[in-house]
Image 1 (cartoon, rainbow, N blue to C red):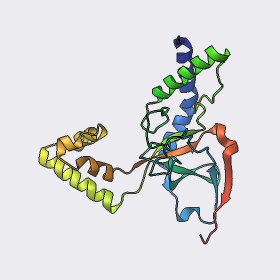
Image 2: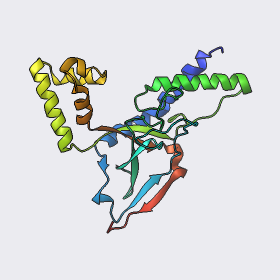
Image 3: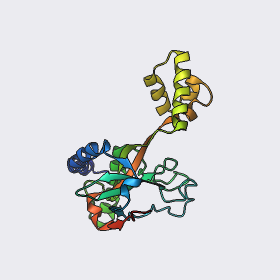
Image 4: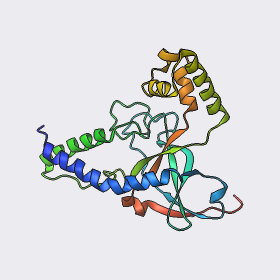
Length: 230
């Protein structure tokens, strides 16, 4: 298949231009993202009925049963009194809902955006060769109808204890917090700090990803009334 790199670069540029405003909005909301709880009681919230992941006959992720999300939601402030309830993405499958990733598209929380752009560009090339036209997609979400947004969960007794033990091991080795975070990102902490260190890093990590509906998916949003005595 002959690749049309000119069209790929144009697609990437358009996506970057369209996504700039969204990214700025995301950055502005990060500090105001809060977990659901008492604040939602007696209020109206927005819920986006996003499509569930297509498993294509593969086994579902054992952690989320194929939904790609956990049962937790976070509040994202919107206009007026309403907030959007955004589900937390499953860490185990990365949001795809599958137990294995051999045939997965690059739609996971750990994929680089360029991987998605390259994958979609290849689909466009194939569509052009087969039908003489390319599919139209939202330039912001690339047809996914959502964006992954970074958030931070509340620190728990377990996550705090794991972090303390991790830092104790790092101090004994003469390593900084930055050193251990870097090693953890590459899954190499056991080699640096001994067995169980990588598991400690994962237990202490309070970062999470939210699946936030794109502006093109407004029609999938509905208003839900949360009873005051719930």
